[in-house]
Image (cartoon, rainbow, N blue to C red; front, side):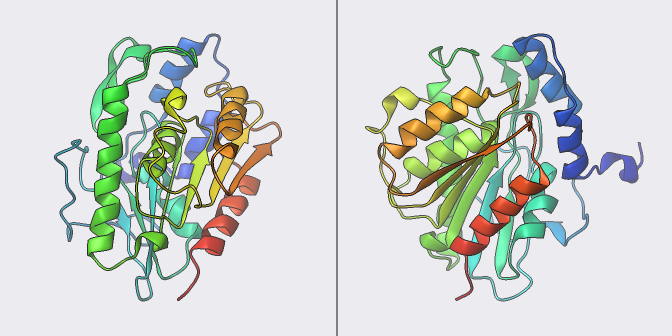
Amino acid sequence: MTKKHQILSSVAKRKRLSEVKARGPLVKLVLLACIISFVSGGVIDSGETTDHSRSYNRTSLDMAGTPVVIAATAKHTATLIFLHGLGDTGHGWASAMGALRSPFVKVICPTAQTMPVTLNSGFKMPAWFDLRSLDPNGPEDEAGIKKASLLIHSMIDSEISAGIPSNRILIGGFSQGGALALYSALTYAKPLAGVVALSCWLPLNKSFPDYVIGNKDTPFLQCHGDCDPIVPFKWGQMTASLLKNFLKSSEFKTYSGLMHSSSDEEMKDIKDFVQKYLQSV
């Protein structure tokens, strides 16, 4: 396979996802994992590079490799950390995030470790934590979720150590990555710039608001397609209702006809949100 064929744009991947018409929930998740191209490292458009300059704390969760980093093209004063979905890699969203950020923003897109996923009959793929049930009240990988959140916290702490204030760091994610972004933000004590959660849910939702450590005043943007066959739209609605009970600023945006993917309209909303809360200083 040539490098040209290996490197697929995130837009093309999301178009493929929007075309998935699976017959059952389990099949949908298997197809979701199999339909994504696992991209190898390297340099692609929009200045994307692999950053070897900083050693992130990997004791809490081994990643598949060094995070994909798009360096700021002006003086670095803010950071966007974005987490991919099940079966994807950091490359899957790096170009899209790089395209919407301002010149002073550095983008970090880590890749989760490869692990067996219970819902996919133990098939191994990049995952932030195990998925065990399609029932919103079913069993969850509590230990795995908490372990993964420690990795995100350590990445935030690393940026703070490098001189970026916590309130200049915005985190987000898609699907399972969005779920982890929500959980990580709510269980992190220092104030963040904002949180973007796409097509996802809040893990261990019965533990909230008791589990909330910080970021109650941080702006949250939730985006969800009303035709999502993978993470049901009602899960997004339930999460939004729960968040509104204890967050000062949370917005839930619905995209008509959108499946488990993104759209130009959604990307514009994300760009507006990121640029609003990560302004030049």
